[in-house]
Image 1 (cartoon, one colour):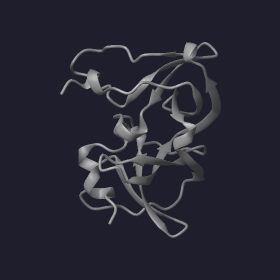
Image 2: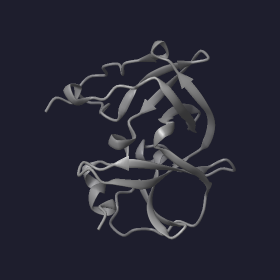
Image 3: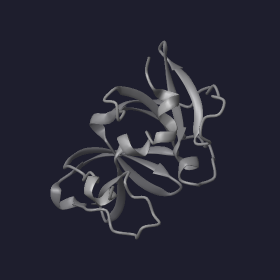
Image 4: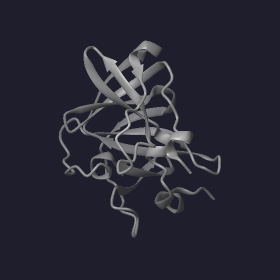
Length: 163
């Protein structure tokens, strides 16, 4: 299946910008549930390397993904490192909560259709299916993530499948 034919596009609205390795990325605010401090993460055996483990969030066990590791960056926790809890939809239709480790939370931005451009074509070797588009915010380009595609690849479904 051609990934371009099923690619999602960014919609105008509010986005939470987060920092990773001196770059800023946008997450749709409607998918963000809360932002919490780093805490003890329990490892899960045989999970993909970017799945740091799970945390207990008020009685619910949720998987945590380190976005630095997912993108091939050095895992590096600092004072502002935190976990953004998001709700994503599995291909089965179930909604699950997951934690994303980010370097920092920047700001909420309200994007208009004019602020958003489609994801550029990089060629066949770069997977862009998890990108919604690019946004120009105050003269800086921010990459907008499709959280459902970013954090729920096939390799992760067995780790987070409910029930």
